Length: 134
Image 1 (cartoon, one colour):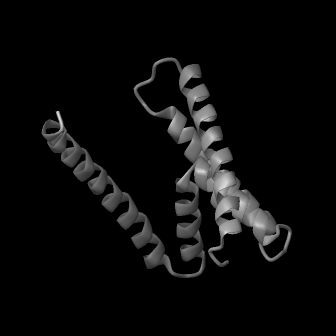
Image 2 (cartoon, rainbow, N blue to C red; image 1 turned 90 degrees about the vertical axis):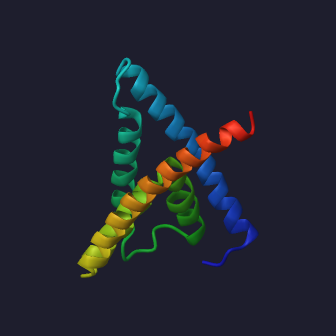
Image 3 (spheres, rainbow, N blue to C red; image 1 turned 135 degrees about the vertical axis):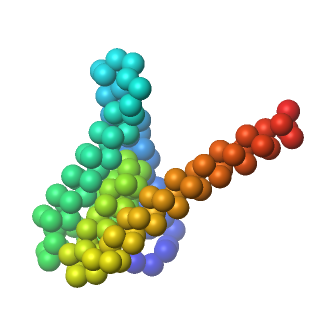
């Protein structure tokens, strides 16, 4: 799909809905769980997002049940805003289902390890710069 203004707006509208829903669900789960030390809200959102992207992809696979515009709103926008973990999970599983087991495992490993390391670097950098701006 080409990157056009209308496509960007469709993804953005879906992203708004998904992000708002992520906030609502995550907050509700954490409030319901009391004061847990584990991030159950994020875990719940990631599990739901992965289930939804798998379910919708499975239902629409090989059929044109969704127009390109609906796919942009739902898959890239709403589910992408709800959790990018769903896209990560889906892409990894598709690689493995296509027989590219090593690429799927590499995708999972690289994304998890590199992203955790980069978060750590970002935190360290932010803390170091904090003194410079105080």
